[in-house]
Length: 387
Image (cartoon, rainbow, N blue to C red; front, side):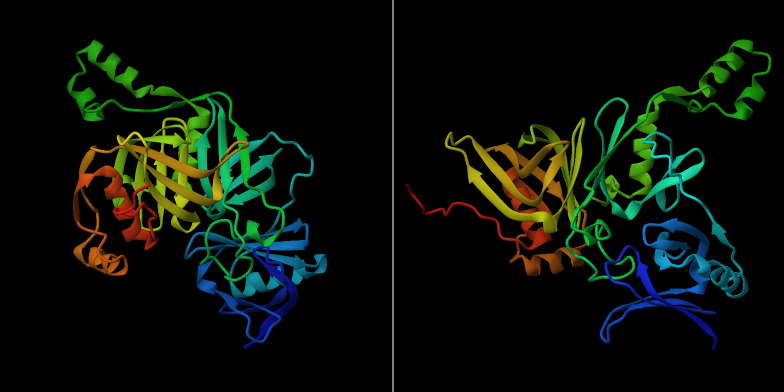
């Protein structure tokens, strides 16, 4: 089988270069080490391909149809374009589109939500792209402002391809981008038809001018902040907000002392989400280094403290601890959204702390569910201890 080989190519912003080999069945990339991991992409999963100038020479971007990701291959020479365009055309029946980035340095332009990434264009040319896999959270920080958070990672190049957590690309360097904010002015009219207003209804009431007028008014829609629409589209595409039905357990209107406010707690298999009126936070269980259940001296309240590394960040403010407060006698009845088999497996790892049904004080329920999902120790005062 014929093939084309290119040396000193970087995969997905990796720190080290490797060898890239194209063949009729797809391509493979490997570091210049004997025991290095490999990354391959089958030709059947090839999507649109683009050629552009980047920091490390020239880059080929290929959309992976199988999991809706973009594969970045950097380090080509300008003279490689004709060779690559020919093999893409003959082997993959695809055109290698050449495009130029905007070099004006403007920080205003058009933000487009694509299938795999957020693209910011200036004068109809792309200025930068942000893969959705790199976005860990987003918030509406103002009426017209949307903040994007990127999870810092120190994984480096341990994992190739896309079987790695968000933020791993950014974690390849010493300096990391952790937040970006977009100012989205104006409003947008969204078309919305009133419930029960259909075309057939209008046809049945041709003689009633008032009814026809009311239907037309209902179809005109309502004005909505452009920033809100941008935020909702970003949450949907980046899979940041998990569906409520997928949550294993939910606790509503929980008082938080840090960050201050009331948040709904949604607990999932690998993360928990704090949903407030202004800010939402997504916390991976791996980021929780300490979990403490502490009684307050007033004998009326209990505190749940989560020690985080990296800490939550809201603008310039960092929260290394999340502190929740519960009334001592505040009880809750809850059913976990898990199958009997899942509960049995998780309970075996957590010494039976995880149960299908709870009916006891809320602080104890959250502590048990947390222990069952993360298999981490909860620090609390001993029952027999006296000062």
